[in-house]
Image (cartoon, rainbow, N blue to C red):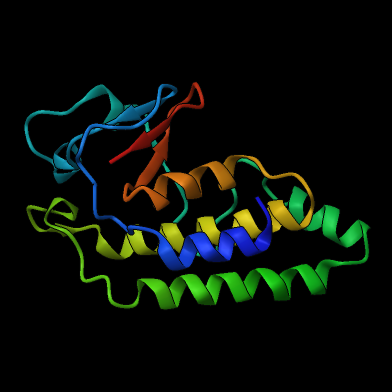
Length: 164
């Protein structure tokens, strides 16, 4: 994936339009709702074991930590890559501006809409960094899930991604 392809994906993604629909690829764990996180009596094992993927820009990347920034710095490209990834961040923010939520993102008194939106923006920026450094990987794969209308919301201890 190139940076231009990522930007095109951001523009044309079916953001959150297919959450809850069972259709993800092997290697991912699909959940049909966020009910276990509402504190109800039925809790799934996935809810107990899952770590949420980041949803705000100040959170640490659970896959790369600071290694992408360190590689950019070693190449003398830290400012350029930061600037270019910020462009993707802003484009994603713009693409999601009209997203008002989805019924499956509201569980009891909890509304996960902002978490879902923030996670998508975070993933797009990290995918941009992967691309700029020539190491497209985890975050680029995550963006493909967003493109299809799902929310890759967490990761299990074995590395499997949890998708709504």
